[in-house]
Image 1 (cartoon, rainbow, N blue to C red):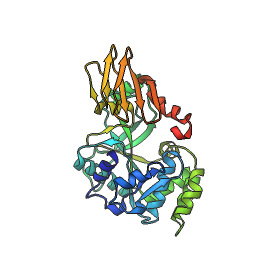
Image 2: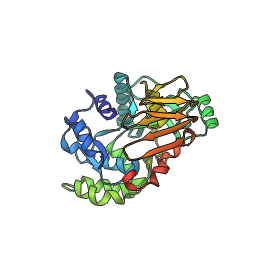
Image 3: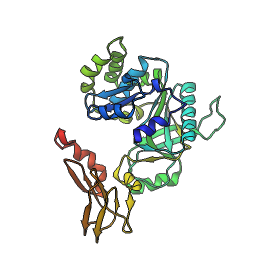
Image 4: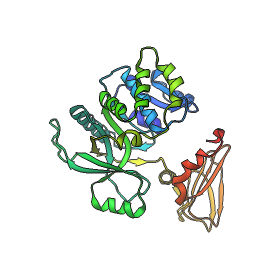
Length: 320
């Protein structure tokens, strides 16, 4: 699975007992079944949906309670990365930058096309580290840019000083604690409660669901004064969207991509996913996303894919 691959990429860089997995209550049992070699306490289920700022605060509290001076790496589990050596080299460079400068560090992906589905990082001049001689590897972040429209994405690509925001971060614990204190006091207080001896579970169960529901980018990264970006030297793909997932499906001559058997007539550029692997028939439809799970079906136009998250928020809790 992607989660197992994410953990495997850290082999030799981070000891198993220092890896934390954050998941939700619905997925906790499945995650524990997959990662039986991790200590039980290294898999933590969030008791409510609170977006990435709360998740990073939770992870920070877990790490700080064990090593208040630790260097911390935050990685999503929906990335495809095949060059593990280059991945680890990039992380080590980012860790060195975080430790030497005391700043937040993010990993930037050099765009290969003008993708409107990613956030972007605009960077300025390169900086030089005492312990690293590649002057062009690390840059000062000027600003984070929201997902652009196609024309703006094209301009980002032409300018050359924009990187995709992959949601991968590296920092020292005191650095991110300082940013929480400055920009998100409620999250800072939550981290403090988590770190209190013997109080982790109590703080998690009583405080987490009351935290603001906001992304870490909005809460911290876009407000922080000093942020660095390290350019990734590894191959990367984010399959957090259906368009990205479809690149790993079989496609027919008309561009219909599916994880199951399909029969298509006068249909093109559709993405089909069936959890049960059934056969799907298409007639006279184009540019659709069709997803069928055990108890729900999603049908939407590919141009509307970015709004799927908004739609899910309107569903009954049992279907989300």
